[in-house]
Image 1 (cartoon, rainbow over the protein chains, first blue to last red):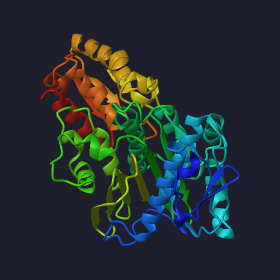
Image 2: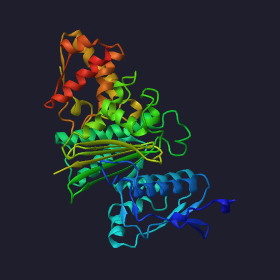
Image 3: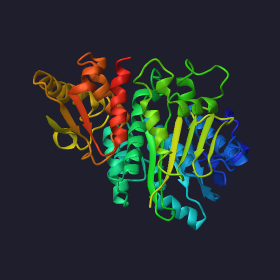
Image 4: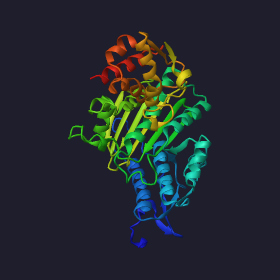
Length: 320
Length: 108
C-alpha cells in the first residue's frame, strides 16, 4: 500500500494527484564548501538525502514523482548529473516517460540556468528518443553506452564551442575523456548484472566550456559498483572509501593489481589534473570523495554518510 | 618502412578491444601492426610509426593493447621490437616513452 510510506517532511513531501511531491533544497549541490575539510556538511547532506528519496520512491515504492525546484537558489553541476541519471534511468527502466515531472525555479537566473545549460531538456519526460535527441543536439547533458560514438560527439561538441584539441594539453584532456568512458564499459558494472538491468553499461555526462570563467568542465557518472568495492581485494583493509579512491588515483590501479591491463585509464584520468596548475579533479565513489586542486596544492579525501551509488568524476581545466 | 597512424589506420584510434569500436587497439594490432612488423622482420627493416597527425589524444588503452599486446600475444619479443624492429615517431616524447614502457612491461 502506497499510503504506508513515511514521506519525508523535510522536503515538504505529500501525495498529490497520484504523485509524490518533493521540494528540492535551496542549494542542490554536493561540492564541499571547505576544501580543507571535504567531509559532509548540511548542504551536501540535504542534497544526498534528496537524491536518496528520489531513488527510493521510484525504485522501492514504484511512485511517480513531482520534483519542485521553485525555491532553488543554487544548482551544482555534479549533483545535477546524478539527478539527470536518476530520472533518465527510471524513465528507461519503467518505460514510462512521465515518471518524473518538475516545477521550474522561481528565481529567473536559476530558471535561465536550467535552459542555458540544457538541464531542463535533460530531465524532461522522455525515454530513448530523448537521449538520442540530446546526442543529436550536442546537449551538455548526455547519456550513452557506446564510448566510440560519445567520445567523438563530446569532442565535437566542445570543438564547436571553440576548444582546439590539437594543443598538447587538450590531447591529454581528450585521453582522459576516452578512458573515463572505457572504464565504465570495462569495469563499472563488472559482475553486477542487476545494476545494469534495463540500462546496460551506461554513463551520464555533462561537458561544456564555461567561457566566462574560461574553464572546461567534464563530468561523468555511472551507477555501477564504485571504485572502493572494485578494489576491495587489493586495497589495505583499514582504508575508508575516500582513502581507497585516493589510493587508486595516487598509485594508478594498474600497479596494484596483477592484471596489467586494468586501470591504465586511471593514469589518463589523473594526468588531466596535471594539465595546468589551475586544474581541479573531483571524484565521488561509494561514500568516498577525493579532491585535487593544483593551484591551492590541496589533495584531500573524505567520506560522506551517503553513497553516490556509483562513481562520479569531474574535471575543471583552464582553457584560454 | 613508414606508417602514418592517422592516414593509414584512423584519425580516431579509440578503445582497447574490437568491441569498443571500429578503430580499437586490438584491431590495429591484429589487422595492421602484426603484418607490417612481420614484413619488416623478414626484410631486416624497421617500422617507423608516425602518430602526430592524430588530431586528438590517443588513450592508454589503445596504446597498451596495440603495442604491449604484440608481446603478450607472443608475436614478438620486447627486445626485438625495441632494439631494431619498431620506432615511434612523435614530437611529444611522452608518447614514445609510454609506448616503449608498455612493450617492456608486457614482457615481465
